[in-house]
Image 1 (cartoon, rainbow, N blue to C red):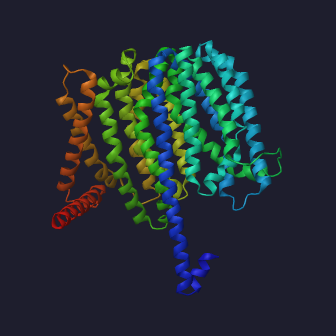
Image 2: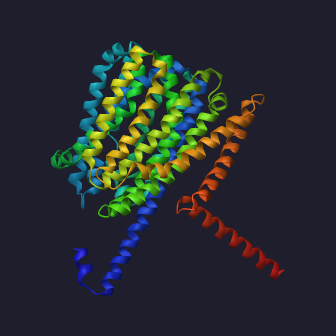
Image 3: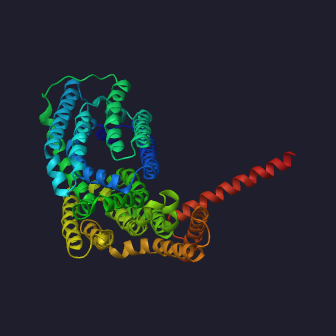
Length: 516
């Protein structure tokens, strides 16, 4: 109806609509900033937790939890039925909608908890690790508790109250961090992670009712509408989860808890910086792509600019982790984790290719090619499972990380070619976008390796290497930008901004001198 008013009414009506659109854009921008901040805050707390816990626990402890979380995580994904998104997209959800959503959430969680309890001994037999039976059954309690959380807290997102959403999620994470670390200090084994997860979920439930007034009632009246929307979301999430965890599943199947723990920690540290950078960026770009979906040339132009900006940050992070891993591990993890250095080096490179490939998800979703995206995810999952199984079975589990990186590199051009079938995107355009970023990144890594001093302590070498990498990367990026004729990339905006700031500061300095 608003669109018809735009076409028929006078300038005043058009002005009103413009103001409405400006307000929507402002809310989107503000929400994007809060969501990116929340994701980085939560992920930062997670990394801090890992860095502390690796000092208190043994690699075998992380191996036990990593094996358990492959199955627990899969059922957690299945339990995330998408009813929260169904309520958010609902124009005017009423009390019955909320009660139905909470009831469905509780029933699914109860069902998943029962499944975990029953299959625990079979999972333990599969991984040949008796400890998993008790661990997975303890996690089944957590699964049930997840269903009890107050679904009213989704109103924070529905009403654009992002500050409350931020506080709600970050405070929960802080409490979980404190409890788990305290338990690790006392217990010094994997049960600290298990008890910490269950205790944290208890507090999550209580806190969710503290921050929102909604109190649920049991009803299934509107469940059918909720299920019809959320079923495809579950399929997409399961496929994505399976592809992301396939290497850990293969490692857990062929190796013991020691290697599994090392691989789990190495994967987390090596891929988190790139993954946590590209994911919020992609979410922020989704509305931009959606607006340009009927203008293919502009859509591709925006995508390539976004790809260039993403690559500008994730390539030096990945190559920087590769270059500094030998000194980073003893400083951050300690001497008992030195065996993870080769894993971090390889998985850091994998993280670059994986993050670059992830940029197409927002684009395909925005133009309505969700089925194509799902098929791509399924094909990647099948390829990973076959190749990684063959490597572990007939070569060595030690080469799983290398195989994962190789597959990610091979799939990357195929993914861009697939996007080229539904948009004007070409591999030539992608290559021209990415080569300056890779050139600057490889030059940076070479400088860091060349100037690194083996005679220095790792605690001194690490900050020196990081500073060397940052400064050299900035220089190489700037020089390549000049050699390419100063295109309208991220660099141009940054140079203009810096010049404007310098002019402003010089103007204030001159004005102050005149006053004196």
